[in-house]
Length: 425
Image (cartoon, rainbow, N blue to C red; front, side, top):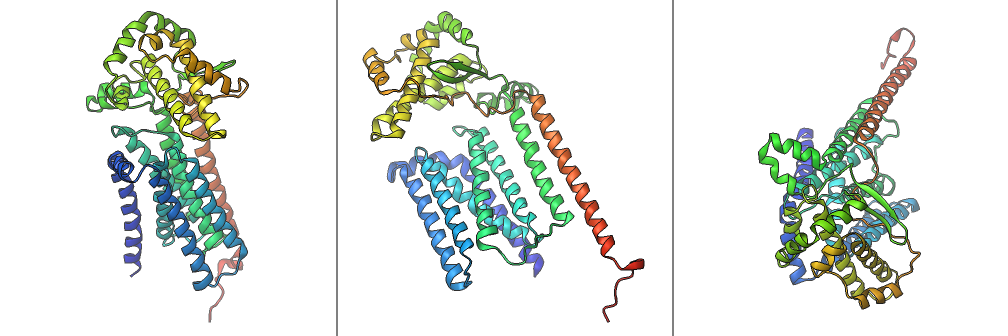
């Protein structure tokens, strides 16, 4: 009976994870269908409705079935639900991304239920978090190799956040019975292994630079299609602080941008004309950041500029509108300064009166940090990355060794003199 329960609890975990992976290649088709029939905001409303339904059901369970009177439980569940709502609203410009909260919230619950068959102390919450985060990492890697889907470290964080929030709701809200405060060496070891797996996989993702993709594509030609995918991470990104503009990231130095613009502006403008009616995603895959860094960056910045202007025109007066206008205006200034000839010859330059009107609405002292090409700006070199990971793994190993030793010593002290167990007769 117990074996059957364990089997089915892990079966549901595997089924949930497999469903998340299976949706990846279908996501764009589903998104287009829902957008055409119900509108893009339907994703956001569905997530908000699901959160509200879950909250009501849990409160009903606590009040009428479990007869729980702990105020802390209700405060915790309210806080967790409010946090889910906050991030859903924060993602409203791309509401389909909020679906991650439902997927990984469900996965988080199923992981806890499955692990409950093996562990019964506080480490179970951490093990569930690390396992759920690992699935989230695999999900993003699958998106990276899927056409028209993209890798994003932010989405890795959102997946982990969804798992984390549900574990918080379990630990402090529902407070399942039988969870001991005393952690065993075995459960700590399992939690440490799952954390180590996350650290190593994250490190491999950071190390999956364009140069490395090109290297293993030469040995395995069947993987050459990966060179067309967007960059997962690049240690060669330059960070430029520009007074009056803000912070911008590029794979090229500023003088290189100006030089390429002078030398190849006409050629690249003609190429942009040829691709004017073709999909944006296809353009980026054809002219990847590794092969054509200047053209790739130009097209991405152009897309962001135009999208932010369109977004600002649809928003009512307020902070969000001002933020969108700032992004459009500053991206355009950067394009004019470093991609000027390409911008002008491609017919993508803004009329002077539009730039003038926007300049009057922008506070010149407002800081701006462009996300284009920024990636995950944490480690400046691959050596620093892996040294950090190795140090963290060594610390984990030391913690486990010390903890196991202390537990063993405590067990010896608790034994009767002579090591004879007390009689139970």
